Length: 383
Image 1 (cartoon, rainbow, N blue to C red):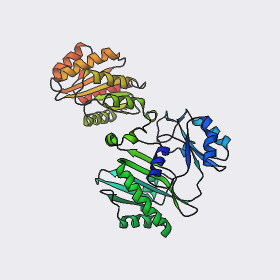
Image 2: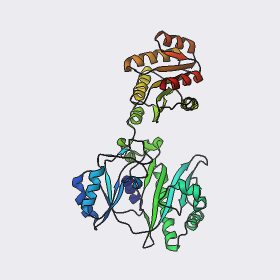
Image 3: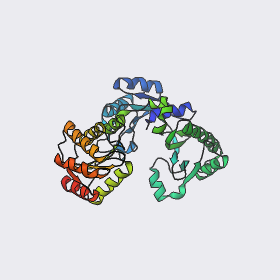
Image 4: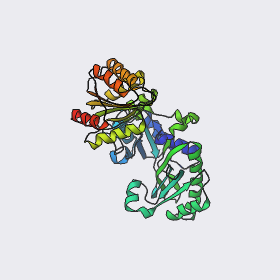
């Protein structure tokens, strides 16, 4: 679960981390009061969306008057911001963070992320801040350091290695020592999957300052992070993915025209790979789980058909515990309930697959036994 920048900074402040003085506004009427509360004659206005690349897309602006802040708010509130991390529709801007100006001398990159390969938490730091870390890793890998933690205890040697890589002076190293210990505490106590500060700046007074903040909370830990769960902004999610969660369906929206409904995550990925192999483009990842009941199948059809780009639906079911004939009956009932108006190709394999295929054919639904044939047929129909 992603948090907005302003929410992340609120949490940073609770842990004693240095952040800018700022106020969040959600209407034009709040602009003047927010600027006066912050003080000064210039401010930075930042559109709040769950995506990076805001600055390059006009979602961050230095404003030298209250009117400029108001114009920025009028431009973005209620509109969608498109960045390189969003789809073509962008993400809705419901709020804007107004902050005091920060005098920047240099920029640093700092992040913490769960690294499943090493089964640890990786701290990644680079002297190349304010840019995409992927670019630094590709062009200047020697400027990046990674250290790995098994728990919330970070050693002095690890801190020293980071400070040395970043070429920090004594004052900055002492502050980095404190920041790293606080960030590590925050990461583990809040069950985070990702923490990123890009950039962590060195101000003209030589002090370190968290100019940006991005937090992602592990969804599996939300049951014990109730306060953070309340910060969830559903408007930042694909509405189909949000609906899928309500029905315990695993759904991810993709850019394509072949809707996929599969039982099992591995089989779903294999199905999408097969579609791509034959020149098609899957419109989604959708795992209805091992118990593909009529209700779940009907809801899955609704999710798939909510995408206007879908031209055909490929259903790929392996009958293990659940019998294929029962799944076939559920598919027929769901299609009649939902009113599917695009071709449906079904591939059944496993328990009672032959009987299931017969039931489908009697209802004029094409059933194939081979995934290769089903994928080929789906690609042909989609074209």
